[in-house]
Image (tube, rainbow, N blue to C red; front, side, top):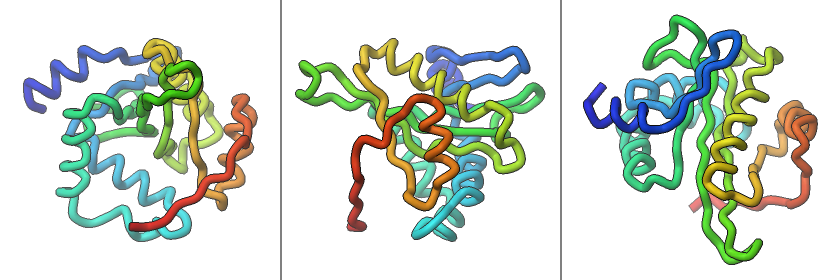
Length: 172
């Protein structure tokens, strides 16, 4: 881990929980584990897409860190270090004119290790994301979920999220 990674990660808050779960900004050594988790959870057009050469993922991670608007977070259990994770999510702060110009938060790529599901990790990651968003003055948290992920939809609804919009995508 470089000096920059160490100082950047320690400057941002982490969240230890009663069972030792720690949610914190990712470091470069976590990128491969994040790609593996995204691949393990892929559905639809993403199946088989999240693998292979790490270079583009490392480039994206560097851009995220430089831009400062999107932070990749990881969740670790006791004894886990860089490169070992049980969950991940990306949190982005979006500026806009709606809601009197207050920023919105967008959470994406929420993934929990399939062997660790239904243990409350996802709920704790979402609560952590909401706390970070409130600290940044965000008026709401928004997310999109693949239409095939009906179990995830039920999870988000249990957390109080409402399916208020219909999303569209077009590959470029």
